[in-house]
Structures are given as C-alpha cells and as structure tokens.
Image 1 (cartoon, rainbow, N blue to C red):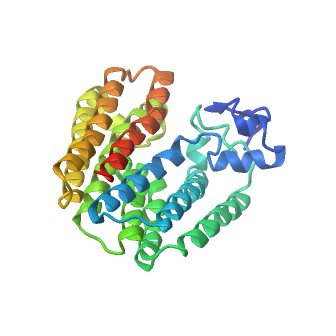
Image 2 (tube, rainbow, N blue to C red):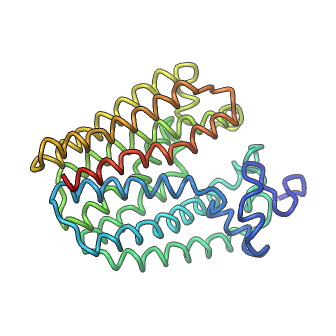
Image 3 (tube, rainbow, N blue to C red):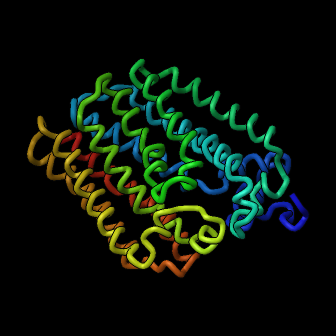
Length: 318
C-alpha cells in the first residue's frame, strides 16, 4: 500500500478516540482493530440472538440450570472472538475494496499496519479459542457450531455476486439463536428457526441502514448492497423488515409459551412489541444522506435487541 493510505498511529477513519486507541498497548492496536474490538456493537449484534434463543428455550421447557450461566458467559466470549475472527476474514478478503473507500482505507490491512499473513494467524487464534469454548457445549450445539463457519466464510464475497449480501450477514449473525437453543434443550424444533428468521429480518433492517453510509463509494467500485438496490425506496423496505422482525419473534414467543400460562405469554409478547417500538423510532429518524445519523441508528440496535429480554425473563417466573 502506498503512503497515501497510511493514517497516523491511533487513528482509523471510521473509529477513533476509543479504548483501543487510548489504553491498549501500541503493538496490539492493529490486531484489535482488525477484530473491531474498538466497536463493540458487532459483538452485541452477534450475542443478542444467542440470548433470544436461550431465553425462549427456557420458556419452552420451563427448566433452568447452572449450565445456562456458562452458556451465557461462553456465548458472550464466543461472540466477541468469532465476531473478531469474522471481521478479520472480511478485511483479508476486502483489502483491495477497502483501499478504494474513504471510510475504510485506513483499516489495518489496506493501510499496511498488518500483513495478510499476520491477519490470517490472528484469525486462527481467535477461531481456535472459540472452538475450545464450543467444545464445552452439548453435542448438537457443537455440530451446529461447525456448520456456522460456512456463512461466515461466504459473507465477504456476497456483495460481489448478489444485491442481498445482508441476507448472508443475517444467516451468519443469527446462528447463535439455533446454537443456544440446542445447547439448552438438546433438541431442535420449529421454534428456534422462527427466532432465527426474526433475527435475519432484523439484520436486514439494521444493516441496510448501515450500508447507506457507503452507497456512493460502493457504486463507483461495483459493490452491491440492499441500500443500493432499494435506493429511494429504502424506508418502505425497512418497514417490511420491521414488521417481519416483530411478527416472527412474536410467533416464536407464542410457540415457546404453548405450555405456559396466559399471563406468561402476555408478558413475553411485550418483548417483540418493545423491539418493534425501537425499530419504529429508528425508522422515523432514518435519513440516508446523514452518515453520522446512520451510524448512530445502527449502533442503537444494541438497545433494540436488549429490549425483549427483561420481558422474557419475567415471563419465566409466571
């Protein structure tokens, strides 16, 4: 890479002034940036479907155990590591594209801070630790965990061959709903797949918002996205994704609460409604020409995804 793509130490165009820049040892910063450790929203968006899957699995069978605590901890650590490994893989495959986009050309690989070989080694370390955590889960969850690698590997290439790369992101990012359901229940049913579908619809919502930051650069270099596909009709599509997310998650709640009291079902159903309220709030503020506003809306999906969980938790005791 040429020096024109080099940024001052501690500065990345789309993330600066965070804990990695100020607290992490200098030698580790490029690798932590590869993992997006300076931007925890991605870890949250990977972790939250895990919590949805576990919570609704508990509602479905009415049982909890101390192992569920480890499932939460393990899923949280695994989400951080696998998000980091996935982002590292994404940066390896996208290094030439990132070098052409103003927002991303200062990332560690296109800016020359990390070599491709170093990035591959770092990806392997993160994936290896994740595997050790996965091996503590029940057999069915382990099998599902191995299958999760496929969409992770495919996703970075999706924007080259489809206008719907956000679907592939949703397939990868919401796999934890299936995995945690299986880890708790030891079996599968239709319910976790409905949760999974709700998560994919949610991903289409928030990542379409996110993708609008890069539509001009993406058009110049030929990268596809739902933001480019929908264009001026994006708000209309976002309404459909909002509705799909709420209806599917609500249906999953109904399926999970079939053997519970009406009161338990009613409280649990407030969760999808609360999520829908937050997504509606985002939609009202959606402005595809306001890059900073788009990023704020995208990041607010941590709070959106957390909203159903208190209602699921209370419903467990009713």
